[in-house]
Amino acid sequence: MIFQQRQGCISALFIVLAMSISSLANALESEPPSEQELQRTQLIEWLSGDFSNFYPLTRDPEELGNFPPVLQRGKVHTLANGETVLVVKQSMLNQPDQAYRRHLYRFVAMPRQERLVQITYPLNDDSVPDSVEDLARLPGCEIHWQAHEDAFEGYRSPERCYFRNSEGQRIHMESTLRATANSLVISDAVVDSEGEIFEDIGPGATFQAERIRFLNLTGAFLPPGANSDADDAWIDMTLNGRLHDHGQRMNLKTRADERTLPFQLSITRDDEDSERIHLRIYSVGQERAMTHVEITRENGTWEYHNDSLRISIQH
Image (cartoon, rainbow, N blue to C red; front, side):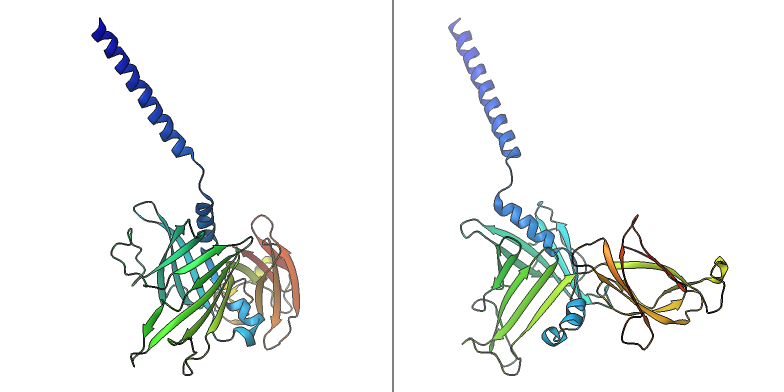
C-alpha cells in the first residue's frame, strides 16, 4: 500500500515536471525578439534590394564624380543553420548581370555594446554557400553599426583594417557609413600607419547610392501626317537600353526595324510618393525637356499619351 502511494506520488511529480518544462518551452518560443534582433532585421532589410549612384551623380556631379554609375544588389539569404545573411553584388549599371564584386555579410549582435557588427566574406562567384565555415572573412575589417531614430551609422576602424601594397607598406582603410530606408552613403579614406593620407592614392571618396527601380515600357509612335484614330497607323516602339527611375535619358526606337526615333525619355522617381514618377520627353540633341509631367500609377501602370506618343510603364 505504501509502495503504491509512493509510486503514485512519483508519477504525479513527473507529470508536474513535464508540464513545467512544456510551459517553459512554450514561453521561450513565444518570447518576443530583443531590440537588437529587431534592429538587425531592419538593417538587413534596408541594405537589401537595388541601389545605384546614377541619380546622385547627376544631381551633385562635382561632389560625387569619383565613381562611375554602379549598381549594388543586396539579396537576403538563409544559411543552413537558420541564420539570415545578406549577399551583395556590385556591377556597372549598364551591365547588371556581370558582377565585379561579391560579398556575404553577417550581422552579429553585441548586447553589451548595443551595436551590430558586420562581418564580410568575399565570394569568388555567383554561387551562394549554405555555411560560412569554408569562407575566409576580411580580418579586422568589421563594420560596427549603431542604430538611430531614422538611420544606421557604421564605422570601420583603420587600426585593424589594412593590407600591404607591393612595397610592403600597410594601407589602412577607414570607412564611415550611413544607411536609411532608401539610401546608402559610404565614405572611405586610405591612410598609412600614422594616419596620414597617401599622396599617390588620394584622400578617398564618397559613394552615395539610392534605391533604383528597373521598369518595363511598352509604347507606340505616330508618324507625322498619320491618322491618330487608325490603330494600325501607330508604330510599336521600344528603348535602346534598360529603363530605370534614376533619370537616365534613353533613346526610343521602332520595335520592328529598330529605327531610331527623334525622341528620348527619362524617368525620375518622386522623393515623397513611390506611386508617382516624373516623365521627361526630349527632342534628340536638345538639353531641355520638351515635356515634363508627373504621373501617378493606376492599376499597376503609369500611362501617358500625347499626339504622337503612347507610353505605358510598369515595375
